[in-house]
Image (cartoon, rainbow, N blue to C red; front, top):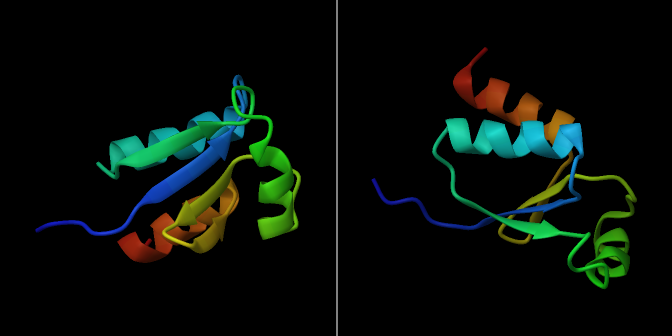
Length: 82
């Protein structure tokens, strides 16, 4: 089965919530693009405008904002039927 779409994770170095979200995606074999706000601080203002949030991680599937790590964990548990 071919997966379509793109997952983007906005994160910062050393953030435990960011690491958990990325680990969850890796464990499920879901490829993602990590945009480090440490390396690309210019993305922070656009991210706040798009999400209304100042926290990380912020996760997108294509243009749809999923939310943060808690939102991802909830989504994963619903998809798995847990």
